[in-house]
Amino acid sequence: MNVAGQGRLKMTTTINIHVGDRAAEAKVEHRNGSQSLLSSSAKSKIGLVSSISITQELYNAFENGVNDRNILITPRKGNVGYKKGDRSALITTIRNNLTNTDLLVTLGGSVAYEAAKEANVTEFISLIGNVPRPPAPLFWGGVSLECIVSNKDRLQYLTEQKHIDITNIFLFYNRNSEMNAAELSNWSDLTNPNTQIFAGGTNADGVNDPTVYGANFTEIGANSNIRALIVSSDPFFQDSKQNLIAAANTWLQGATNRYICYPSRSYINNGRPGQSTVFGPSMVDAYNLMGQIAANALIQPGPQPLLRLSNYPQDL
Image 1 (cartoon, rainbow, N blue to C red):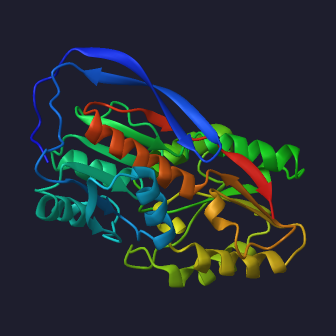
Image 2 (image 1 turned 45 degrees about the horizontal axis):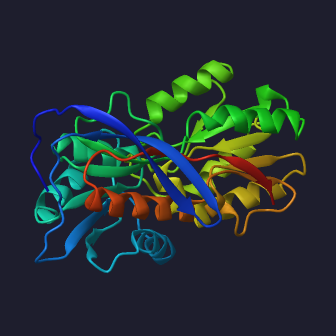
């Protein structure tokens, strides 16, 4: 891991990244004067740090994306956690465990990206919810899930395809989310400001806690104004999705006109048919792309694409 250096002249080239039978073409800026991170005498190392757990399925997708025996993926630090305004655990993990890493890869949303930025890490790539503006000086790109901007499409889908009145659609969000302020600001532009929202997933101490989902949805069920929910693309919700889905299913069973929209294809399993839609990207594809970009960043050092994934709906 390197210390921040001087800015260099930029030039633009094109890289093709492939996922399955699909391909995404993106512009990438390279800085002149970059030196290769690969050593002729040792294998290069990618270090992973994530605010949430890295499941075996997602790790395999990342490893398949790297697809290079000369690149080691170590260390792997998942489920580091986060609280509102507190990235200290992530920052400490980055500083203590990745000093010998050739490239840092952050996973688990914008909170891990911000931790790397605050730790003054350079030459890192991130899986993030939204494009950072402005990006860190030597942030090298990655994948954006387009979390916030996709809420407009999810809202439109529920109103036009499911014929749900916009005033009865609420955002289920996490107060601890790094993108909380930006997401609520965007949501207020789409609906009645500061009224069509419900905060969930945190206990009385403000800690992310999957055991509170039951109480959350009991409270939601008591609010007759809430007919449909759009679940935020918060990393903790993703990590505890089975608990969330189970609580949501109980709420959905209470009335046939209730509906829920989940933010990624990871929520497909166990969702209640006829009352659930997944509207978002494949996390497996996202991790595979991250692996490809990480390998390319080691082989051809310099800023890489920041790919924006397309989101699309699938009814359960």
